[in-house]
Image 1 (cartoon, rainbow, N blue to C red):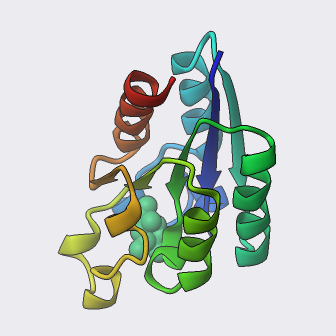
Image 2: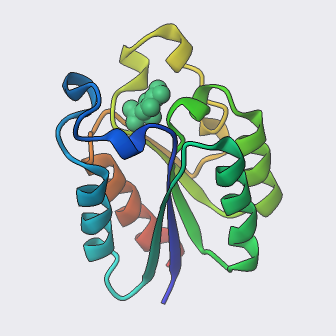
Length: 143
Ligand code: DQA
């Protein structure tokens, strides 16, 4: 039984009401329920925070908790957080980066990710399916 951690960054708690034309109608609860179903037989934890500090603490704690793989949508922290990058480098746990929208088809400031070059893989623009695809790859490769 593998341990998988899902991390959702800031404002993703508002999925289902937030900028519907970009992020769609699916709520975070629905995404987490589907991920839990798909990870049957494994231990999957879903964590959402609007705080950079809490996300860093969670990544650091993953090492002690012996998490096998992390799937993260860092949301706006993707484009700003060297601290989250450093947390991943410190724990050395494989992770996948997910974005609901295609960040490369949006504003230029969203084209930079501080995580993509150290991620196992990046999924952008598939909507909620991106999380499920990343989980499928994580299960195949690390569980
Ligand atoms: C996002 C894209 C980010 O640029 C944005 O800040 C988000 C969500 C996505 O899932 O498409 O909050 O990560």
